[in-house]
Length: 337
Image 1 (cartoon, rainbow, N blue to C red):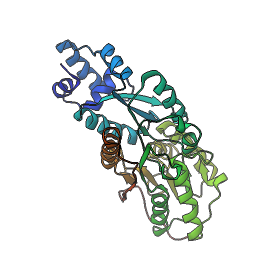
Image 2 (image 1 turned 45 degrees about the vertical axis):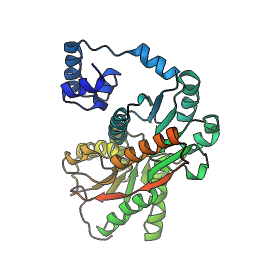
Image 3 (image 1 turned 135 degrees about the horizontal axis):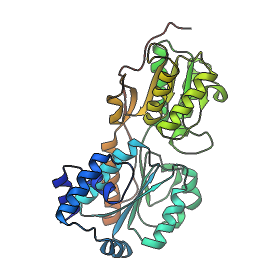
Image 4 (image 1 turned 30 degrees about the vertical axis):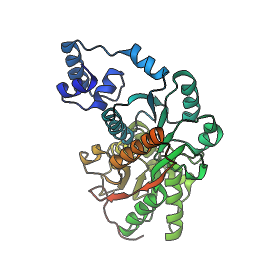
């Protein structure tokens, strides 16, 4: 009995079964109960000792996920696990806080478990500059661009976040919006949100739109709760805003609830656009207009490139994956101000 058998019998994916067995919180109660019922029926016992020995023998690929509430990462991770397990690769997954130093964690993991490669889901380039030279195994960074770092063992696949954020502002501009607020991100960090903020600032400047980051931007982490709090704070402070751009879909979903609780309507009173294109946005009311990142392509190219580097010593690869603006129901038109 293997994890693949558990997935087949339970009707859930390999990624979901793995999260249940690792007691990860990002699993529905129904999925957890069904998977554990199959585990008990079949008498399945994860061989943790064998897994540990394999890790010590440098046979595992480590996947470091920066942010446990980022639903885009959850979707990419599920695909990564499935692809690696189909390739008969041992996988070790670690969930880090979105403000954690992922490279420092990886350096310690090399000493303790000796993985043969890393997939970083999210990353702060400053952390890589400081400490990545200590890592010699092949690595891939997803959702940020590592080309400028110049490490011979680090590939990257990302979306052009600056261009995508600019496309959102241009879209809102075409719908008459001139007072736009931004939710999420941190100007002090070289994570993906910084590039999105730069895209916002440069595009609004080019279009002649007012944008004062101190009043029109509220930083927050990538979670619904933080998106809710940030949206309330911004709209109570700047009630004349006609549109919000949330730098992550989970932030947008929280913001939509805040808008409702403030007695406002989407899009009649205020429009909102998200970023990531997670499946959940298709089921909210109204459906969220958003930037779709190609999670399947990010996962597939990341895994393929890492395995080629591990087994065939291929040089690093840097690619920008296409994005798409998905127009749904959360943006309305206003008269130009």
